[in-house]
Image (spheres, rainbow, N blue to C red):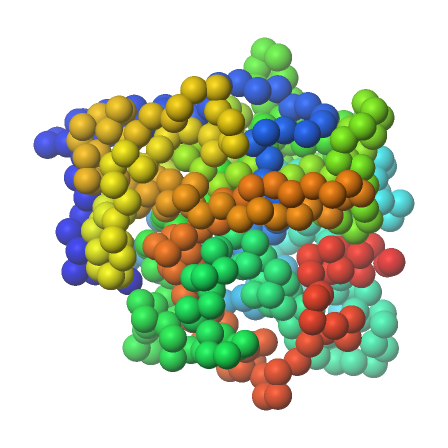
Length: 472
């Protein structure tokens, strides 16, 4: 998107760059906070499932096998080995003719039953290897327990759509599923993570307008900009909670934190049969108490953490099942990857977009809670090398901390939570890529004439998608 900008440098040598980014990654990684029930000052107003919908969307859009940090990456060589489109090829793969082993006729195969949550919960279909690997369109959608079971909901949504429309050709069932998915992405997910003023600038009247896109353009076919894939869309890493309660019996960290928690919600293995998700703990398919007795706290809807410059501790030491090469810190990996890809600084991108950059003292490192124990430090407290020279990913997260919205959350009490959203740099990059890819697909939601809505109405959201998949 901004190929004319110089790559940001954070030292005079490779070792010095890596050392400074290590220090910043360490500063962006929080201390250990065990998984717990009950309200949490770091929670946003976004239900927890949206974090993993964001991960699911990332897998739907991108596939980049050239991710080794041991070599110099070339952004021009980053080929997306699948279509960069909201087309659910991470679910459908190549279809029942080419991949019959994931289908039962025109329906998806479903795996072994799971207990503890939804009565019809099931694991993904798997082979008989050790460990048993998921038979799905994109293996990354088995990376952790939550995205794995979300993938299972997409399989069930397709199967129910097929059942409710007897005789409808497979391709038409696909279109129906994709329509509802795209509607959730554009009408529900995007407004939760991007400042409304940024989105309004991309509209003519009430509708998004392709002519309002200023920075994301392509000549022949859509592509995946590195400013999006290696920086702006990595916002979801800051939304991950330290742990999650799946059901009445299971409360675990997202990844192991030995020795306190030797097990976590790590994937790429057969699902523990007791780990079925109670989806009301992840999105508002029903309305629960926000606070109360210990039993009510254990039943509550969990919320994603706020978009800020802090990542939870389990992400500081990713397990070998997730990463096979150092460093294990997700924050450090993101920073190193952005540098090796030659990303410009956040300040340079802001200026290229005609936006006044954040001052160094406004680029704060830490949790965006309402009342921090002590004032957050500026990025220059980590190293002066970051003076006027902030890594793009960190800049975008820091920018969001200055764009908080009071969000009324879907609970029984009247509760509002200050919720950071992506601002004029990060939000514009994410929104333009989302909208550009949708407009670039001739069969997509935004290209329909006249515009369509789901049968349940314009307020259709992730909770409705989940409820339908569950058979409600």
